[in-house]
Length: 214
Length: 214
DNA sequence: CAGTTAAATTGACACTGTTAACTTAACAGT
DNA sequence: ACTGTTAAGTTAACAGTGTCAATTTAACTG
Image 1 (cartoon, protein in one colour):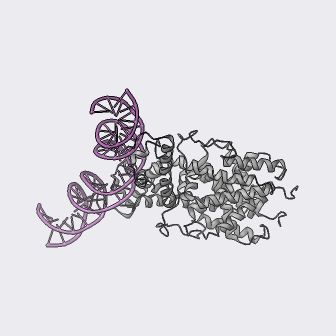
Image 2 (cartoon, rainbow over the protein chains, first blue to last red):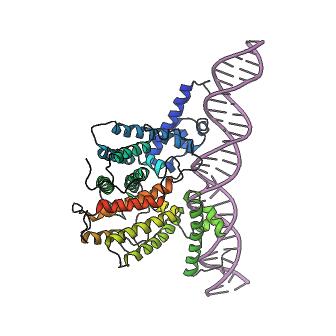
Image 3 (cartoon, chains in turn blue, brown, yellow, red):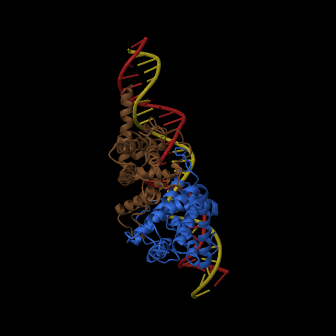
């Protein structure tokens, strides 16, 4: 029963309500367990109402993750503004914060970075690419660039983008394996903290000069 | 129309036929696009016939991946028996072969290492764990142990399992990001070969002694 | 030729994402 | 006060999914 002409605020509110219901199911049961009908049930609306606010399921999930991706980026951003640390320390802090996020919100992480996206969702994302405040990768690249200019990396390394992507891949590898394989007793998994730490140290050792300039 | 009493060979043959149909769809369209009905259509049997040979869809996929996982392991195994390389070279060759497999069969890889398994499928896998010929992780661990005994790793590293898992995570990170994010133009991806190579070098540099004993 | 039984199919159930068609209720204009 | 109009929401359906009970088919045995 329509309560007539919603203000943009009210529409936004309902959108958030749907997103919250989706997030709940999402976090506690994973993506594939989340159906439009269940989300609807939780909001006490009918399934079709969701389609008045989101074009489809993927749009809903994408919106949800975009939203929480910005939270991650803001979170990481605060490291950058802490001037008491040098470039390498900042990179390490970034890795720690990143892995903490991944392991705290495994389902978000899984959807964001471990699930191939349909090619359609190219530029639909509202995250401002390259904006250090909204784009966590841009932040990583910025920090790497900063460190590069301080000549902390091995002399044979020139490609900033490549260094950033390798750093990312290392931490991603640890987190991703943990998320998808931790319950598998096939492997005698060592404590995740140790794995994160060793990965960080290994990457830093492997990428930086043997005798740092600072 | 039953052609009566199948020999174990015939049963096995049909099972393989189904697996082959599944693999085709799997490879060319990804997991989520593969339905039991489509597999059945490709085999010219009815959907339910599949259930005479596999307990459910997950069992089918698991069997398929187990099968191809053994192929990977056999493949990697051949590196190990090549005595012309030292421990570190063998590890590097292992990484290369592993990443090549991952990038050649991204859908298999995705199902094997990037998708959380339902907890039910614990010990149902027919792969012999710990068997170097069938278990690729056991092979990695073995090679790491061998290298460890030659004291190639940094003196502060004692945990063989941890080293192996970190190496794995590094390579996995590069491959996994490539598989799930390569189409995303959000990031200015550098060539995948460079990313694999730098990761390998970084891991080796980061984990091994500065002045190797050999 | 009849009985048995493995092999395969039919048809259904409960679920999914999604959409066309419909209802409801609040507003604007006369 | 009576219309339209239209936004908000619902109903009912479509086409698809995984899965399974009940059934048929056909080849073998006695």
